[in-house]
Length: 400
Ligand SMILES: Nc1ncnc2c1ncn2[C@@H]1O[C@H](COP(=O)(O)OP(=O)(O)O)[C@@H](O)[C@H]1O
Ligand SMILES: [Mg+2]
Image 1 (spheres, helix red, strand yellow):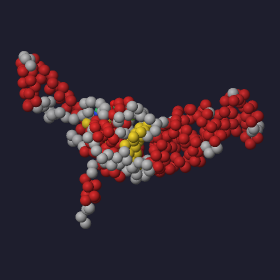
Image 2 (cartoon, helix red, strand yellow):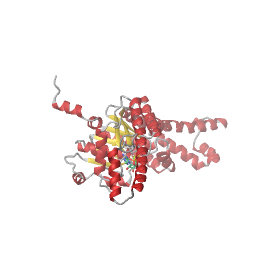
Image 3 (cartoon, rainbow, N blue to C red):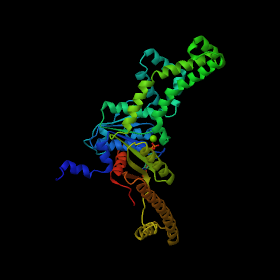
């Protein structure tokens, strides 16, 4: 059967555009400083130009990136990117693009309000001095809250696509384990402390069942009465959220494994960064989380034939320009030699990047490989983000 024009068009789409059109959530993961935040924003811009109403949920946006999107800063609420900005960059008929910054603490507050049903319990948790520690310092809480927010936003179906940027120093497993780890904390910590008090009480000849506030205050002599009671009461309150919390964590985990979601693993082309990226991809695959693409960012391109350093035509035009500016023939030759050396070194670096591209392709052959060149300038406006997105959408591991 002859494919319909629509089907035909869709098969012509690049890997990135295919993901933008067919997934509801794309999560950018990878080591710090490789361009996750920039990539998330660039994918958002591209998605808007493809007619998808998009939200970019970012974690640590640079001021420059906010400016590139016409914002003075990122806020904790959704902000719409002005249409005028797209028009200035000659981009028309775009769908609404929103950006928003994740606030871990505020998201945790919302979780507490949702699961600690009793308003008094809510207030006690939120006002406890231990809450600050639990909400911000608990391992994996930032990662978990990112997923929690993502889940909440995706449930509203307000957006066709949500692009999630992830925290900078995140280790692959932090992200994957976060729901389990938080769940474990909530279920075990109270039991842990209860077990400790029970042991203590039996050691002084009393069963835990007989324990009452007076006895606990007795133990408190050793720990500091108020501190001990406060910890027990906080953990008791915290634990009251456990059932709701566990259900939610399971729903979040199920969402992360669904076909609607795609993980994009990022790295630079430095061998150590690729090591991390491939490790990340492996971990995701082991956890049955869908790896939808591998983005090699800042790939350096060869300027000319690798052996020559600089081609004959370029060398001649350099010599002519130097002669025209009054440089002596000897100085011009010397300058040309230095230029050729630089060019050769740049080409060697580019060849190493190409080798890494090949390495990624061989390691994960089924995963689409997308590459972005190392731009000379920082990405500082919408045009720059659009250009970045165009590379993602068109160039596949160039230079091979
Ligand atoms: N392809 C590229 N070419 C040039 N600069 C880039 C490129 N990708 C990212 N950058 C720059 O690298 C820096 C780090 O990028 P960022 O997106 O903040 O990384 P991450 O979120 O992974 O920490 C930013 O200044 C960004 O503009
Ligand atoms: Mg970042």
